[in-house]
Length: 96
Image 1 (cartoon, rainbow, N blue to C red):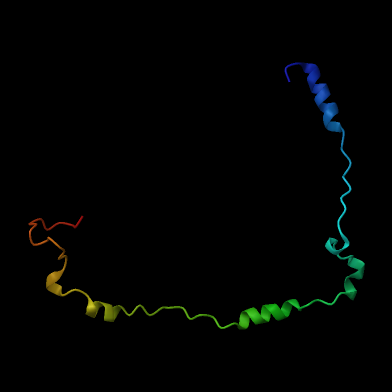
Image 2: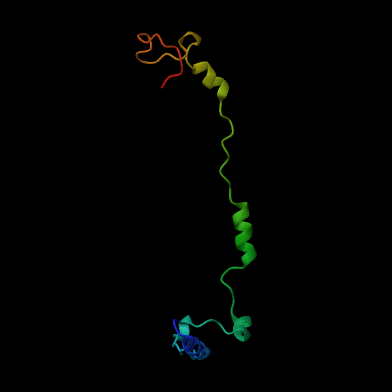
């Protein structure tokens, strides 16, 4: 919009509203009329699904890490930090 008169054209252009297009929807895809909703029997009651979901057996959570057994099976106290090639390396710092 380089010219001031373009603003007038733009405002006039934006004022027009296009009508909504009519779209054909097949009857089996149309929503149920709220007045006829009393005649429709639901397949399942909502509370039934909620009860069933809460009664489902849940998988037990694994909480026992068995750390005592793991410490028994761990490396011997004299071999801490021993890796391949460690005997040849006199450096006793952190492994890389």
